[in-house]
Image 1 (cartoon, rainbow, N blue to C red):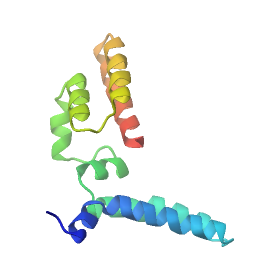
Image 2: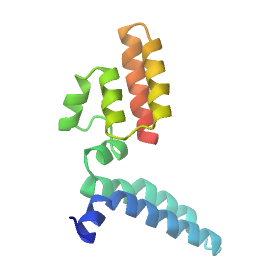
Image 3: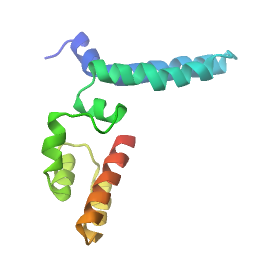
Image 4: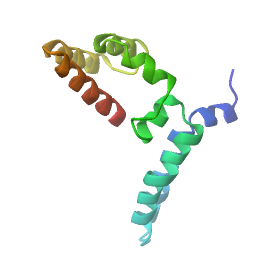
Length: 129
C-alpha cells in the first residue's frame, strides 16, 4: 500500500496543474492584475517542468516534444493502430464510446498513409484528453 507521499509523487503533474489553476482563478476573482501572467507561466513553465521531473513516460510525451526518445515509443511505433487502441481500452484509458468511435475511424481508412495520419491524429487527441 502506498503512502500519501508516494501517491503525491505519482500524481505530481495533476496536483501542480490543479494548484496552478486554483491560484490563477483565485487571483482572477479577487481582482488581481497578475492572474493572466501566472496562468501562462504556470501552464507553459511550471506544469511541463513538473511533468519532466516527476511524470511518467506518458506525462513527458504529453508536455514535451513528440521527438522524446522513450522506451514506450519503440513499442507503440511497431504496434498496429488497432492493437494500440485495444491496449488503451484494456488499460482503461478509453471509455466504451471513445473506443468505438476511434475503432470506426481506423476501420474506415484504406491506405497505409491514412493509417499513419490517423495514428498521429489519435495521439494528438489522446494528448488533449
